[in-house]
Image (cartoon, rainbow, N blue to C red):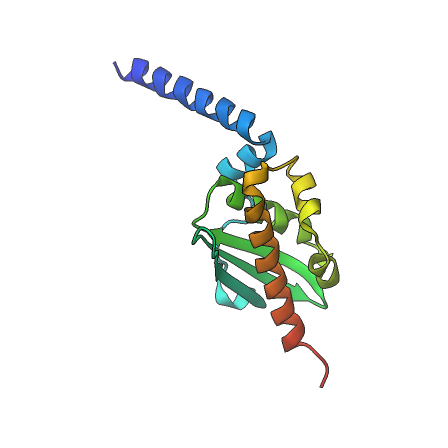
Amino acid sequence: MPDKLDKFVKALQKEIIQKEILDHSEKIVELFYNPQNWGKPPKEEITVFEERKDDLKGYFLGFYLKIKKDIIIRANFITDGCGVLVASASQLTIIITDKSVEFADNLKPEYLINNLNGVPINEIHYIDFAIKTLKNAIQKYKDINKPI
């Protein structure tokens, strides 16, 4: 009996994933099920962070950055949001790791959308929320490190 149940569950999971890929890009689905750079690192590994609640849906998103000489050497995130928000934050951490603070600060939503191979129009606000949260973290870093 457990063998039949296992087969049923696997078939159902495959069906659900195929449906999600029809609604979203394969990249979004992959990053949702296998997010990269998930988790809040220890305090000593964080140079700057930004934690925000989305006004539209009430989701939480936090970015935690380790920066040395204006290069983002590590980027992590946590969220309680949906698949698109998880994928967006995950892809952002991939994009900005080993890049300059200036590069990250100049990212546009279109760049992230292209990196995710498209996002449904009714879910673009998650992209905007992720970009805005990241830019707020970058601004904090700039404020902390501006010349006197």
